[in-house]
Length: 566
Image 1: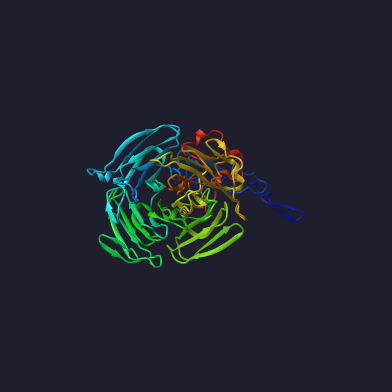
Image 2 (image 1 turned 90 degrees about the vertical axis):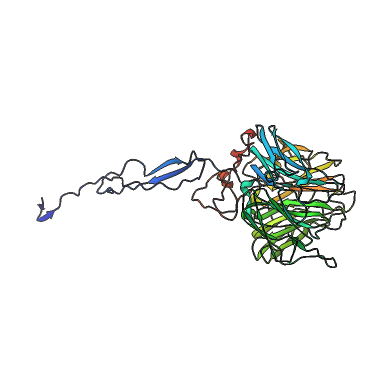
């Protein structure tokens, strides 16, 4: 109805409209893939929107809920596990019939574990082995195996060894003979891979070798030999043979393996960079039967289990081999590229040197610290690489040491806590044991060994222009634990020992084994899910953010079974 005011038509007042909520949106992706995250849905006050002075909608426009609360996070990808697969490669025997093989099992748990070591493929053979035993909490044991299980020559056999446990443990192997010893950490079977590259010291001494075993049937393996034999000038070449056939550089050796079968390829050529491809995950070991390295004349066995390429990193901190300060031979490294045109920068004291690895599988060999004392180095690459530290031969009896291969874990694969075992007197060999530590400078006073801070007066070797430093110290034989009081601040830990009979061993105490080839970006961090959620090359470090004070470990038993979160 209209009215008139002084001759004008007048409209009635506009209707007041109160707002009402529209439909809820769908739930957002959970902020974590495990261990309780948050999801939310939203709605708008637009059905209808308020107008003409109408009231808005009451209530919240955002509704959060807890999600994935009952979804357990995956076990961290690292060297702790419940099943392992290993083999022992040929070693030089001076006093027949030789010494037994050794397997070290370390139990970091607060409960006892039951462990079985067996050789499933060797049933009915003289070297068949099966034993089950218990390991008390926070302790370790050493088991002896027949040296008939040691591989010999270029041949296929049934010498794969399985270690299984009721709870997570770490496993290391020691291949010891008189004047010829080395050790290696063993990778759990759930973190084995399908692409590897061989490594050995050069000159190759009594021969370079690659050993492979698997737990799966119908496993097909192709070993592509390096394109160049890399022999010492003036020496007669000892070619690679398999199945009675002489192989040329660049040839492919194809092998089919059943469960726990094994194969070993030997050569006088340098097999560093030999590519190993398989259609099932395999355990790959590589090194030398016995070798002399550098200026010294002493020889030793050399071996390590090789990391699959997806676990290779781009940042490495190296620590010098301990107590080699008389003759100062320096530290030798072999770096294998996983991709063509890999740039390698090495920071050594104030010196920065750049190298290029031209092709996939090519090897860069460098020596750092020659003529100097206690010099750490930093290596950074633009593409993933494998870095191996090679201990050089003893030069004089007043400075014992001998060849060994030591895989150097990348910064991306460091851990905040390690449990490990160091050997005692062994068949007349008394070992002097060391730990080699690489860590951020700000964290060196936060490292604990068996619950105590590190001794004062250690010789730390800071690396200029970086945040890293390193040191080494003697540690007695037996079970030990080393950790950072802050779980989001990992560090590297290598084990090294030298015997009174001129033999050495060395290997990493442990490492992450995360696949670094992929990352899974989230709009919010996914804490503790063992993934690189923000694509920064680091795994789960975001759980503690920038503040670490509230994450100091007060009750270590909460984490002793490797449920560390950083």
